[in-house]
Image (cartoon, rainbow, N blue to C red; front, side, top):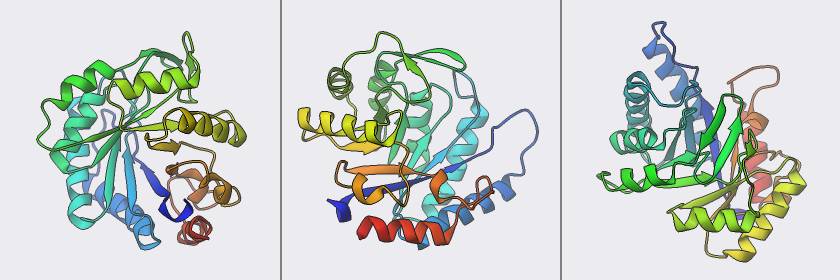
Length: 248
């Protein structure tokens, strides 16, 4: 399992506000950070927008589409994903469709979650409709009870996962309150739905990744690969060590 476990890195973009952006500088920085991951053996990456709001604005869609297109042109073999802070998966899907990205991550897909910004409701129906308008396949990876919020009317993890699969999830992302809970959730879902791809969505480190690969089909990593004391700067040394532990 370990060698076939897909590792997906994440590069976090700054929020897009009213101020003018240095787009050339942002593009250069993004390509540099993705290049660090790629040269160290990571073949799947997500670009994450961090601009709060219920819906993605036109500025989000335009900038992310342009950035994503550049990334795909420079790294054509990279599996590229899009994630928006806004609870707006159709916008993420249209960005992916335009720039050639392969998948999106949607954090609230079924049910409802209470988060810092209020109640966010599932967007499975929005995804269902947007799929009809895609010019190419765009996979949708969905969190089940994203750990940054609290579910309203929580269902057993197996039931929630089944609902997500019913409404078209292409992969289930599970993240518990701690590493042990994440493994337990993954094991329960894999037992119930053995054909469904299961990803661990956080809490993975160089020390526990050797155990993590036994319980999932892939994992999403970011903060554990950053330079010490630096935000949004990733370490070649840490990524190489991490990938050595994955392939171990």
